[in-house]
Length: 300
Image 1: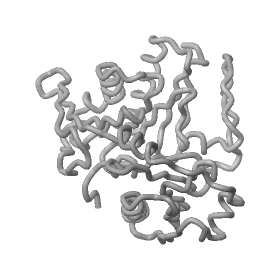
Image 2: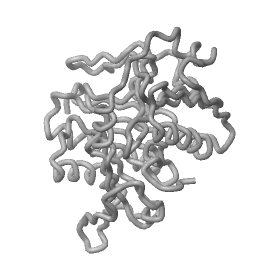
Image 3: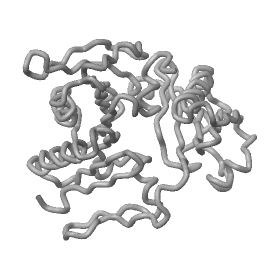
């Protein structure tokens, strides 16, 4: 396998595999095998993310404050890594939509903001809930729900939520984001587009019959949390937004867990999603992210 075909980053209980845009099918298969071997070595505990060159998530890019440089080959890493480690929690989520309102992680910058949406600036001990002057009532409700979800499930109730309207930015926000520029406007058409991309379905994956079987258990979110059965694996399909989640129940058999990334690849192919534009996140039970939890009712 050529070194330029993939790269690997592991941090804070998470594992990230990066597919190069020019990688061959054989190299992609080898990359999946490497991910499985690494997951087995680490006891199946890490949350796995598969990134694709050119479509990297903000979470991945935040690991490299100086930027990411992909090289054409050689045995040395193509990354220019941060010298300070992973550092404190600093994440920015955008809450957008009208019928299907969802949060997604965006670049930690004022350039991600606009007047028509709500945003959450997650600083670890402080969670800032920011409401744009043109945000709709549904987004205002959802931003409070997501902020509470982060506080109660990620911070075990120990973080403080600060609610801020556009124009009332705190010094803490400005220290992280810098001086606030003139923000972009938002249009109703953007909310309609977000509603379409925020749709999701839930599938159960089981090999009880000796071969992997895919069964749709719900075609519309928010899902009931008890649909996730610990003896099986599940796929949450948010492919319209370029993302597939594989949830591994703690009681699922070893073969199902090992095949998690292959499940996602087969599903992407079956649904005709563009593989090189679709991110995959593999979540062991108990390690769910807030982006995954938001698709379920009353996760708390």
